[in-house]
Length: 304
Image 1: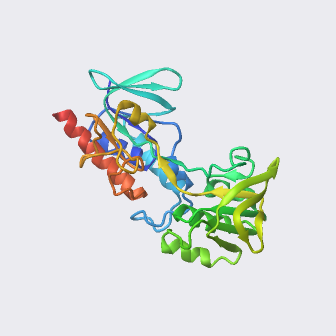
Image 2: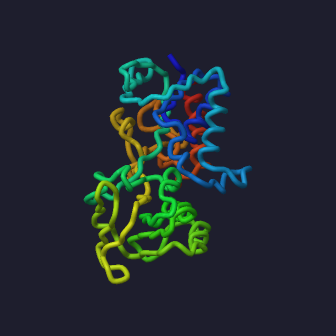
Image 3: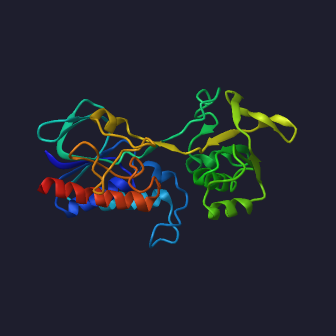
């Protein structure tokens, strides 16, 4: 039996594993996707000590650091169920195998939001993408749309504009919610067209995406011809595993935690984008901080 099981291979999970090992706790670090949402960040300009670093680079360094400790067992697989036992918790994996731990830390991050419009599901992977950082290269010299008004959308549009012939940034509001730094970088691009106060009603195509239908006309038409569309409208906390365990959610749907990052279930903690512990401010630095605090909470719980 492990002292703690950390579910999630992102900034919160990796940091928690580093601190857990330094506390000399036997640690199972497990998750389905290495790097989590962190690998989608093309430029991380606010990680202390690194003026320039990409998300994938930062995640790889965190992974190597966490895996360097003998106390940490790293396993890449999906956790399908978490159950409470007399001694702690039982984790069941996708292959049916199980492991047990005295405590658990949910660092499961978040999942991309979808538009939920006709054609989105049909053309996923055929022009519809949810990661501008990952897929921008495939649209070199083409016309694409990026949907959203937050940091991920504005950053994504700036990234895609480096390779695409033309980029439409479609946002339903009058103003962007993004960090001013990214808005300024976007305005410096001469191949980006701002499409404000519009929403996508439908995504059309023939084998691949060819056209977007808007809720009201733009430049005389409610249709825009594109080769692809990047959906960057935020994310939802991945709370499903913790919910089945009985962990309570806050008013915005994130895991409710106390000052030690413990959830409503004793021995179950949370850190990163899945929790509301840092005023719902989803950043690398807050995820890492919560991961460290969660392990401090775990150590205190085990001592008591």
